[in-house]
Image 1 (cartoon, one colour):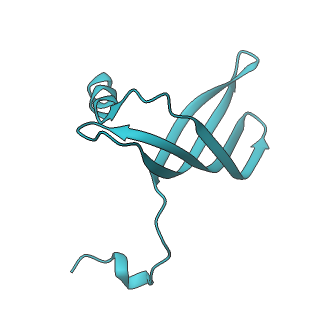
Image 2 (cartoon, helix red, strand yellow):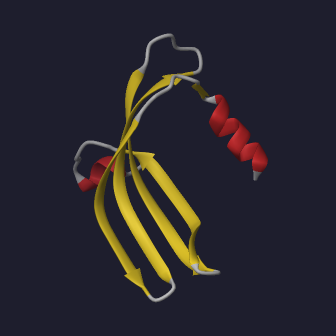
Length: 91
């Protein structure tokens, strides 16, 4: 797993970027909880000199362990514009 994190981290340069999180939904049920959000940031990508805006659609799933919430899953993908359903099909 650490190879995957190393690969992901190498895609960005240190920029001191700030992060703004816009929560869309959250829920708790017993020992499980989730949040969905849009994360807005300005980032510097490897090989680029200027910062660029980045928006991610993010889902976090948590499990209660030892009295605290532990992150079980983080899924993030680029926020995309609306498109027709058949636009995502491979041709």
